[in-house]
Length: 331
View 1 (cartoon, rainbow, N blue to C red):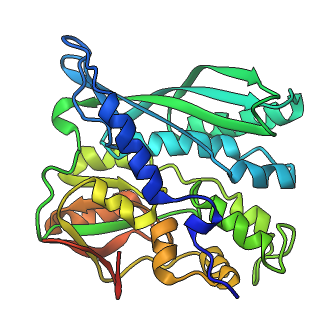
View 2: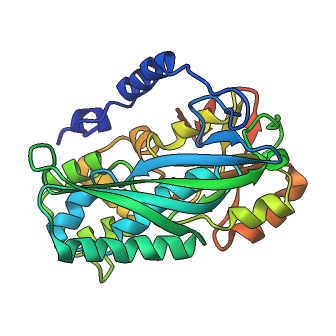
């Protein structure tokens, strides 16, 4: 059996990063005065100076997870994913979400599908205490096959509460927060694995009552607990673990991470790894592997941070001088 990788399935993380760098080199225009930017392009959220506070903005979509929703004709959770992928990036800079707009591009209008998508959007807004203030639907038969769902979220944060990672120091501890599954990343590889295996989305998950497809549609967790966390703890760093898996940690500091006691991945990750003969390092470079969010705090804040972030949250390692190591894996 050949070993499947994210790049072979069609997504080259390194090429994506080079594309982002190419765009950043051109996007250098900055507003002056009220509303000027407070962060450079490349962090989880952009910040605009509003005087006594900052306005945070993010934009993201659901990605190829929608193709599994189409296969199962089950669209009532992808709206949660769309909101989660945006608000979790707001949380990663310490901001509280307040408003959202969605963009639904379709090949052909389908009121039933649209109504189901709206159910998920409403649920995501409720979970994140946020208002959906508008949106846009476009019918684009020459461009879209099926549909694509994306959105933009705005949040607010006191400027002295912004978390960028600049206060991270050697000896800080890492608090891992459990994900709900794959969330909304790595699905090009996940779909390739299923397509080349003996299984389909309609086969049962081993040891569970759900199908593989239903498991893969588990909605992305919304980490609303971060709002309380930044009020009660001195948080040094926050990371939303999305595309590129643990490599995402390099976004918040140039220091290193040593993960000695990682969270246990949900069974769906190990099933995909076995089905696709995927190397362990490739799994951790592609998927969240059971940890959807990471909190960096001083050691004496760890117990409170774990309490606030909820069941399953625990200290998984610490900040070191350099490198990114998870057990025996050097990433």
